[in-house]
Picture (spheres, rainbow, N blue to C red):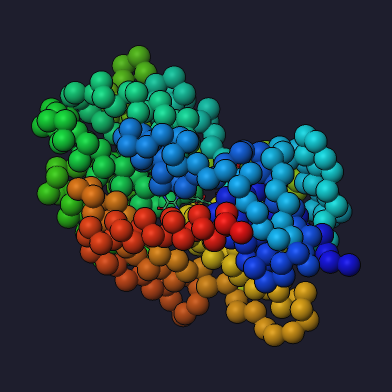
Length: 377
Ligand SMILES: Cc1cc2nc3c(=O)[nH]c(=O)nc-3n(C[C@H](O)[C@H](O)[C@H](O)COP(=O)(O)OP(=O)(O)OC[C@H]3O[C@@H](n4cnc5c(N)ncnc54)[C@H](O)[C@@H]3O)c2cc1C
């Protein structure tokens, strides 16, 4: 009898793992993939939505369209995870797994930053991006601040990408010269893993007059006076605040006992947790890689290889490489790329490819190839 595999979360990590196992075993596996949503949306598609270039339905890949041998997809809300019993309870069913994988991503805690909910906007959720689509056309002047509240946060380049895309958007509308645009970051440089990519971003910021406020965080917003209170006690005036909120594990993971110091600790070679036959991949973990889809995807790939070896009782799986290609929007339809490898060598490597129109095409291909592999039969 084939083992019951349950994957909690059909994001970058869960989809990659399910597709790999289905490709390896076909109908010989018995895999259940559970997600509360009806569709997957790439993180970067939120830019498309916020600038009104695409609608939510244009960028949604519906789980109902997944047709993969051995894989059953359930749209259910996971309410309890018992890692010792490998039991998952949802709003509709109970699943007992032989192998359990937690791929539930990171949630946001908007309420933890005073004033954010009342006076801020965000593009880290689809709903937030939809709201911004209606707000941005009314912005004609003032201080626009993209600010990271605190670490860790998803997709290190995203705040800077947002600023470069806002610069393009306001320029196209002819209002850029009346707008002060800046980025508040917890780091000294935009992408700590890549000096060359950071240099290119800061060069673009200088060219386009985008302010860079490094080594900072956000304590609070005062919507009455439109003042941003930073970590070091200083303040900045804002007219439009786009915040990257505090991240945390989903409530159900917190209650499961899997998280330690905020995130799920894993063996960095094979993503196993301290509980037998329980794995965790992607943003929900404290694996030594940034929180980004490409690393969730490579973690899904690593667990798949590990399980294939284990279930076939032959071969040897390569340890998790923590590698992937990260695309960076520079504005003017140009996209740069960093090929990051965190774990396979003695030190991190992250060569940067300059932003170009060809980079934009490669990013499109990246998304199309994932949609095909994860969703097509
Ligand atoms: C604006 C923006 C731009 C980005 N750009 C990039 C980029 O260019 N490249 C890149 O690599 N990454 C990018 N990211 C980051 C990327 O989206 C995430 O890091 C990635 O999705 C993490 O994958 P994951 O599988 O760990 O979690 P997720 O993809 O977040 O998947 C987790 C899944 O779990 C489900 N879930 C959560 N709780 C429950 C529950 N209780 N019950 C059932 N289901 C549940 C969710 O619905 C979700 O589908 C970007 C993010 C943002 C916000």
